[in-house]
Length: 351
Image 1 (cartoon, rainbow, N blue to C red):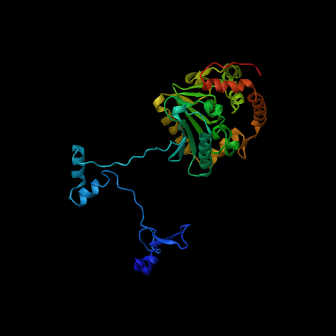
Image 2: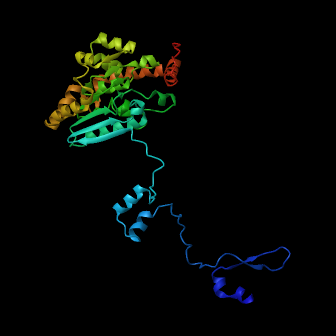
Image 3: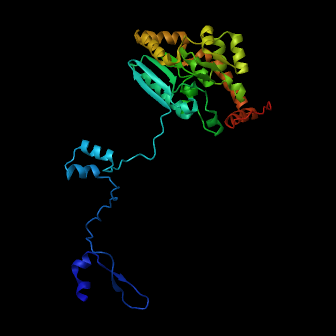
């Protein structure tokens, strides 16, 4: 035993340790752990293979089977193969951006929420327009909504009721949805299918052109929720529709169907629902076929855009913001979105 305790190899490998006992004057030697080199790393720990994880490798390397042979045996149940599956799928992006030639297509991608605008939508749309404005290869932008139910249901009132800021600080200069005050030089076309309510109509009003499906509808129902059409709708609709019609829509919150909107000049053309994006792209390509600089200069002149701003709208925006702040601090404005989220009638108190 003494030879073992004094063996230099075992001592070097840390095989023994000293254990002190309060009743003994000297420490007792004791086994510390299995012998190993102090200068070698512990072997890596690897998880045990999953059942049937290596079926293909073994069948191929040891049995000489081809992949087709293995697939046939698996189909017959003679072999089992472990298929790794992702237990958690990544959420779909709130905005999809694709390029079709010289046209950028921006899609609001929240069909489960009727493409309502939350913070992610505002950031995605704003970033897409910024990219389009900087890229000389992009000559027109089409904005549309995913699914066949809605172009955009406006602000996500459920998110508002939760206290979410649907206009993040990064999008301040771009306005609602990263769009309504994001005045780029490239022409913008709204391809509207389904209903475009509240902010959805305000996106259409902010667009240079609108192509609507036969099932499209427009409206500013904010007054039914205790709030105002604060993303330009309250003054842009009176500029783009006959004033009396516009005031009726603004004060009642009623909707306007696509054929009527076409007659009144709110949209450029109405097409069957399945053709709305195709028609919008065709219109964008007609624009893109022209001289880009001349098109962009013409838009800026027609819209009065200087340094990304429309100066003639500034007093209307100032008034809209002042009135909006006053309304948004009211009890009615608090109960309206909450009642919508709770699917009940609001209780108006005029305060």
